[in-house]
Amino acid sequence: MEKINSQYNKPSLLKRIIPVIMVIAVVVVLLMFMKGMKQEAAKVPEEPKGFLVETSQVKVTDLTLEISSQGTLQAKRQITLTNEVSGKVLSLSPTFVVGGRFQVGDVLVTIDPADYQVAVARAEANLASAQAQLNLEQAKSDQAKKDWQSFGKKGQPSDLLLNIPQLEGARASVNAAKADLMKARRDLQKTEIKAPFNGTVISKSADLGQFIGMSGGVGMIAGTDVAEVRLPLTNQDLEKLNLLERDLDHKPLQVQFSDDNGQKIIDGLIRRMESTKDSKTLLNYAVAEIIQPFEHDLLFNTFLQANITGTTFNDVFAIPTAWMLPDNQLAVYQQDGTLTIKTVDVVHKTNDYFYVNAGISDQDAIIKTPIQAPVEGMLLRLAENRQKTNEVYP
Image (cartoon, rainbow, N blue to C red; front, side, top):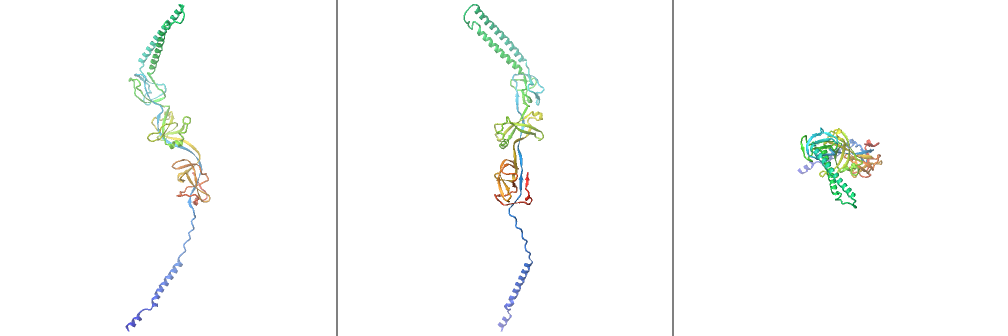
């Protein structure tokens, strides 16, 4: 009896399945409801194909190369003024002071000429004595010849009879006396030390009353007609200026100088190239000349900035460095929307520009948008503000 009662207490299979079915039905209904409430996602239009770029056109211009350099103003002629005779300084020119200006031929220093005037007088006396002796020997020779003829002797008399040796000796003495007189007069002239050119006094080492020996030196002077500036130039500068092939003797190169404040502008000319490079820097040196620097209020050792005008290139394109590709190439946009690569001839380049004279035209639309790996025929598309017209640069 107990066994039968336990079987009647168990729920039937149908009763156990019905709840599960109801749960499934509710889930299905909810899913269908949610699907009906879901909105369809908006369709995104297909993005146009091609790399987005901006372009510019370039126009021709003229390029004149200019090189900057610098140097100090130096005298073209600078010498130590020396005395050729010794003696006491008798007088000095008022211009013979440091910074004094003088003209060619001015007497700067006078050495006491008394001893040299005596030497001239003695030389003149010696010459007169030698000339008198010559006249005496000549008279003896003439008389000997007359005596030979008056005695009716035939033939040529001997040189000894005609007093020829004594006559030649007297002539030699006269020539020597003339040479001594010439030297004495020259020594007397040298007591006046004259300026060999227009210039200024750099330093002086003799003063009034001082005794100076021969070749002792009385001061240092410099010419003021022409001054020079040594301008250091690199090999690239020489190439830009074409200096190595230029005939500077007949076609000097124009230079404009400004002082260390950048205000005063003075014209100069490069007249020559030095034959050796600097042993430490390996720089080349061009030498420019400035005429009458003191008239421009320029002093020696003034530091000057130089602007050198070089070669002029006509009808070139100035291409910004950022637009250039390796190996002097440019990416150009074609009308069919593709990229083409053109090789150009570069005549000059700086940090900012490449100057091109062949390989492109002013009608080419140069791509200025950086492309990491441009390929010939690459598909492109212009930015919206570039669709109708290209920017013209510069």
